[in-house]
Length: 477
Ligand code: GLU
Image 1 (cartoon, rainbow, N blue to C red):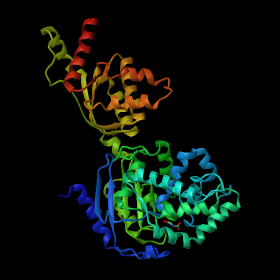
Image 2: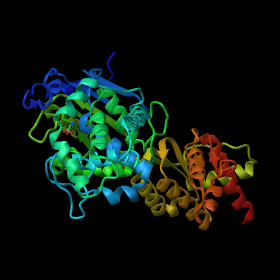
Image 3: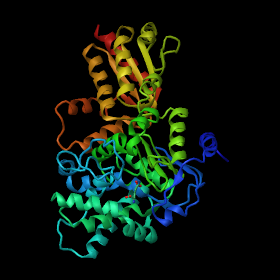
Image 4: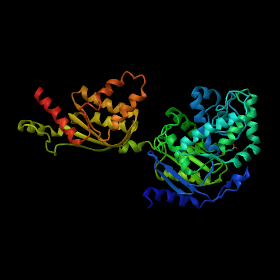
């Protein structure tokens, strides 16, 4: 049975499939021979679940959608500083195969052919004296990396590779221009060979969605759990996809779709909503920029209809606080003496619950923080209920912990109801990630150590903890 979400995707495809404009790439016979009406859509969400529609299992060559991956590999191997020395990050405003460089004689960015061929050259041994086996080895590594991103073993189309290699005069011109500047450490022919191979890898839209979700997920494939590259690399790749990914139509793309993306002349588009999902679309008829006509339209619909524009800034902060209430109408729950119970009953309204939902990132944490601060005079104990929180990022965690400090300082108490251990996991991750702990964090983290009583698995436990705190006040008076 189709889910509601599948229904949305199907509907979007129905809307876009009437458009038969554009032309299939024909610079090599293999591309010209594809079914022009082929159309697939896949969306891979944060936990790896993939929605697949239409021709989602049909394979096509990845072509320029390979460029962000080879760039990620070059960064993984050499570090971002070394790569920046060689390849710029400025949108070129020119066609993808323009024979041009910036004023430092670097390719303007890694999403045009000059930058992509350069990135491929950086995966080869830094020498001119190696045989074909070295290119094979480099390609094996490249294929492993791409396969890790897709979450399944990919393969190259030998015929497309042979055709690309025999017709690629323009790419040869680019590689030889770069070589004439003395920029390449390897032979231009070896760099071209690797580049033609990477362009000839066959993928499906399911693969592109998996690759997109891996980038969205900071380099870890959500289907396999395998980490392929770092979060910093993912951030860099997303940045250049945003500014340079859609050939010379990047500005229009960012404003109307707002998803970092890369398209290829094979008809594929890979789009990413950072932190959330990856999208793969395939339809081989291309517009004047070389982007899939239906692919672009499909992404436009996805962004608009499902609110996926990356600058959809208000959404998270709007939904983060699900409800707020005090416990004036709920009876005292702990097993206390008569006298204690009646005291607790008088301060029932000093106990306030904030239920949060969604993914707690900066925007959401900031609004919660501000709300708790504004309400400070209305409670002595605040119970923050986060059973509907999916994840807490580093900034949000620090902000949540600083709420505890704020309340401690004013003689109040913050308790957390965290049945799934989201905070615990986040703190543990932080400890693993922080080789050298920052000065501020350790005391915060100790403050919310899961062994301490103010992180609770249930609301009942949190209320009893709150009652104990209030009684302590009572006896201290
Ligand atoms: N193999 C193609 C080329 O380098 C890829 C072009 C593209 O997808 O933009 O010309």
